[in-house]
Structure formats: C-alpha cells, structure tokens
Length: 257
Ligand code: ADP
Image (cartoon, rainbow, N blue to C red; front, top):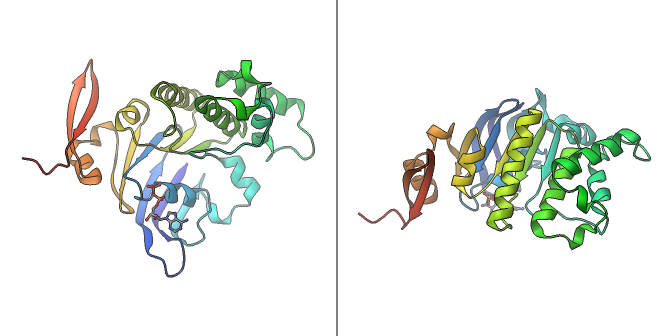
C-alpha cells in the first residue's frame, strides 16, 4: 500500500537534508510504528507521504501511484491523517466527524454519509457525545473525534503523528488499542509515530527507527532490541519479560559500565 524508495528531502533549497535515502514498504493491513528522538524526521516523513513536501526526491507510491502526482481529493480518499494536536472549529462532535466526508459529497451530506458518520461514532465510543461541542471535550475524547473524522474518510491508509503524546496513560492506551482493533477489523494500513516503545510493541507489526533522518532499523517486534534503542536514543535499555510480554526499561545515558 505504501512504498517509499530512496526518499530524501529538505525544507528549502539551501536548507540541510532532513531525510536521507529512506526506503521501506508497508503492506495492506499492516501497522507500522515510526520511532526516533525529537528531530529525527518522523513528522517530515509523514508530511512526505501526504504529498506536502515539495522537495521530496525519490519515489513515494500510495496504492501503486506516485503521491506527488495525485489530485488533493484523490489523495484524501486514499490517505487520512491525524495530527498530534488536531484543530477543530466550534461545532458538534457529529459535524466535526462529518468533515471527514468532505472529499465525497458535492453540496450536502447524503444518507450514506450520515450512516458512515453514525457508524464511526459508535466505533470510537463517541455516540453519547454526538451533540456536544467538540471544544468542550477532554483531550482524549477530542483525539477520538479526530480519529473518527479520519475513519469517516474511509481511506485505506491512516497516518498518525504522535496521536497519543498529549494524553494521560489511560487515554493513550485506550486510543492505541482502539486504533489497533479497528485497523485489524477493517484491514487498514496504518503508520503512526509515537514515543512509547512498550505501547508500540503492543500494537505494531513493523517498527521503523529513524535517527538523524536515516532509517536505521526496520523489522517486526523481534527486530526491536537493546542495541537499536541505545544507538537511536542514546540511553541504556534493558529487555525484560513480564507475563509473556516483552518490555524495555530505560535509564542512564548508556555510558555507565
Ligand atoms: P520529529 O517528527 O522526529 O520530531 P521532524 O520531522 O519534525 O522530526 O524534524 C526533522 C528535522 O527537520 C529537524 O531537524 C527539524 O528541525 C527540521 N524541520 C522540521 N520542520 C521544519 C520546518 N517547517 N522548516 C525547517 N526545518 C524543519
């Protein structure tokens, strides 16, 4: 579904390159997790996939088609994006989610659009909040509205930029598990960036580590190891097993003996 080949990019003609020769693919129904320190290029990579980086060199194919050559409306039908801090105008939750249908309806929502919105409200456990003002919700609820809006787009690919980083651990876990369950149920391809490696291990199929704009590791849960975490984040990491779950604990800067 997503194929990236030798992608390099920079923000301005004379600015330094921020992604260097990045290549990977993500198949239908796969959940890929982008991991890396702040400034390593996760958001930039997502912006490239959204066709927003004008100076992208290399190839980005979405559903086999070059993303840069797609019309905005075609791209919106293929890809839905949930930013770290979604913005909303004052409106009901229902209307905010209906905005996800904009690539589809010409003048007014049809019965089909209404049915789709009602379904995703249920899927994101938001039906009881449908008439509330979206700006009056908690951060976790608002992030669920943003995901519902993306799901209403009915794209086969969902891109998330640190969707849980502003949330408490309960909302963070709920959202991560909801995303996984829905992606698996609907066979969606998902790429999300996040900081919590242990949460990531619970939901991801593939783990892509970025360091200084280089893709330094790409593989399944087995590929995530102490060495990779230490070299990417510069911290000491130890793998532990708790009730047949693999977890990493961190501490120190990796310099201690
Ligand atoms: P991450 O999402 O991993 O924190 P980013 O993709 O935001 O990393 O940043 C990668 C690099 O690109 C950093 O060096 C950052 O300073 C630079 N960068 C990000 N956004 C811009 C921008 N709008 N203009 C210029 N440089 C940017």
